[in-house]
Image (cartoon, rainbow, N blue to C red; front, side):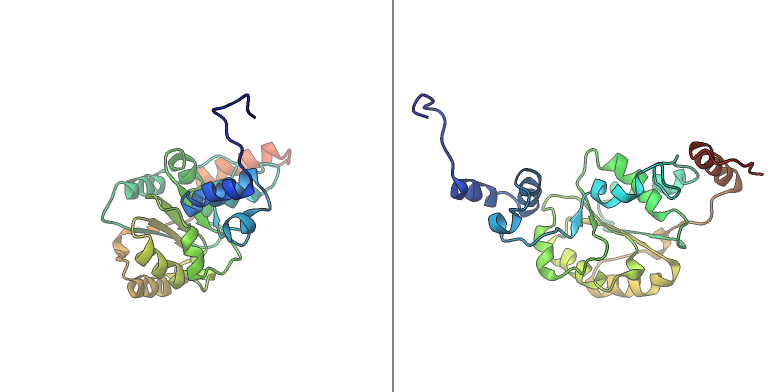
Length: 231
């Protein structure tokens, strides 16, 4: 190394020290990418992270070989997508709520939105099956970004998340999906956490129009080589 005077040799302590100086969420992503399995030893953060990137969240639903896949064309939700985009430009509005029955397309709408917005913004999804604690909030992105809570009606930790975001990450904007029966509890949780929500701005997803449903069905059946005719 004496031949390369501008170089320096780092050991584990040096690398760990440099990584720890990064924002916590950036440090976690770096270690997970280049030093797999070393997160807890480097950063003292247990694995896995409860905050998923869009790619991590939608990975099981991106395969077009599966009947239930987000890889099919995005149809019939342009108005709702435009409302999500409009939410991005509303600095005084911190939360956007999407309501609809199971299977109506809430997650597919999120996927379309994340594909566009994620190109220039940081987006994190609350991981499925996890139970968020106040300590987890330390690893949320520190820059202005978006946090998505899907299937909020099935979670018991929504108030914990909202309280933490309200106090420690006030720059975060929230997108929350729920089934209609979860709206009342969600409104209560938002009120308790001090996050204002205008029910008039609720995005409600109804069934697709017949023309859109037929177009999507024909695409799925033809791609899967399933015979049949849809009227």
